[in-house]
Length: 112
Image 1 (cartoon, rainbow, N blue to C red):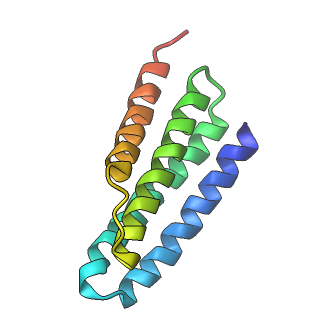
Image 2 (image 1 turned 60 degrees about the vertical axis):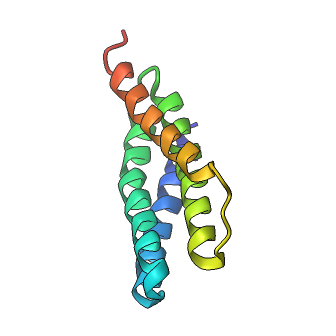
Image 3 (image 1 turned 180 degrees about the vertical axis):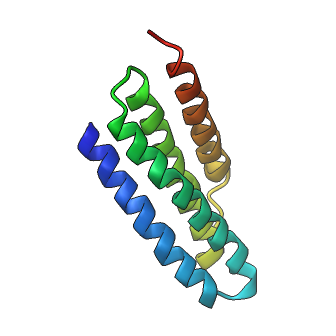
């Protein structure tokens, strides 16, 4: 699983940089959404990397939640920003999964 989390961290980090550049050229209506996705991915990239290196029970579950949530949230928001297509509750579900991942991490720190 470690390779998966490190690969995901690299992809999230690269996407954050690309999206930051795109946001600089996006129209005003999309700019804020794209910047938010870049920020979310930028913060979650090092988190996924840290979870890949952290060899404790619960780390894989937290990483899986962060990855799934990041993909759902980012995909839905970017689709809205660039194609004006709404996927309904997909972005909030992704956000909920990311929050769950962080809470899972907090609880995993206390497990033996």
